[in-house]
Image (cartoon, rainbow, N blue to C red; front, side, top):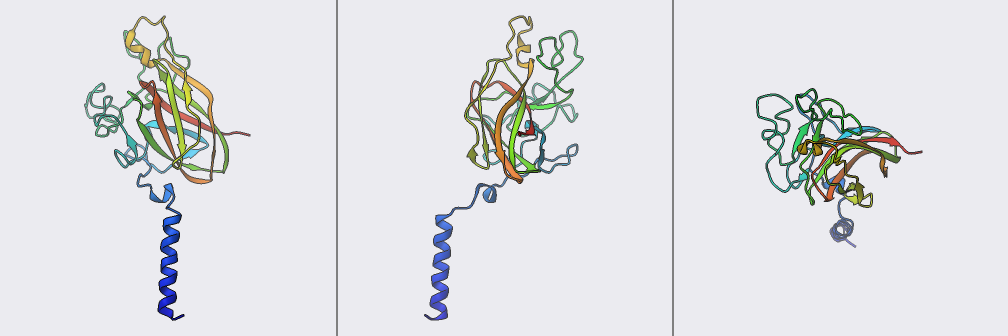
Amino acid sequence: MSRNALFLCLTAASVLAASAFPLSFLSQYKGVPYHDSHYQGGPQKVPGRVLCAYYDLGGEGVAYHDTDPKNHGSGELNPADGTYLNEFRIHEGVDTSYTKFDRKPDPIDDNPFDKVVPPRELPYVGWTEPGEWINITVDVAHAGAYAADFLYASNRGGTILIDVNGKEATEPLQVTTTYDSADPVAWRQWHHWNLAPKFFKIRLSQGRNVLTVHILTGGNMNLAYFDFKQDH
């Protein structure tokens, strides 16, 4: 066989191999870890707290999907007054807000109906609707099994699902409602925070992984963070 014929055969074999074994999710993914003037960026660390509001940069259809292009927290609920938290990710479709303390006469996120008191001025993803999703890039210190505690608030309850690198990693996860009929302030039903210990368990490879958080049913949940710990 001539050199040219051999080259053509090898090239054809490479093309066939490429079509038979498509590129992995990570090699095709165009999103990048979040960063701004306050948060220096890089993948969020596992083990550790992974904040949902620090979902990736990349925009609609790449880093997230939202049912409408407007952020109903930053710039709407929270007035665009030039402050960092009120204008956090203001031009993106994912709806974001932050925990507010010491508000009178009706406490907001430090209210007596909390199951747990969240951190002060913690950014979170809210106004969630079924079909929405966010991608979060993480850096995993050691391969293995991890359990994640989940800080959230949910007026009606619902279900979410977690992907790892484009593949389903959990069954649908039931988010228990934090509704409390004893609270006389109707709008505060969206601000009863709870911590669900070991909300889910997944296996992660060492290094870069992309988590996708899908809202399946219910919606109107506030997603604050997943706190990952190795599960021995």
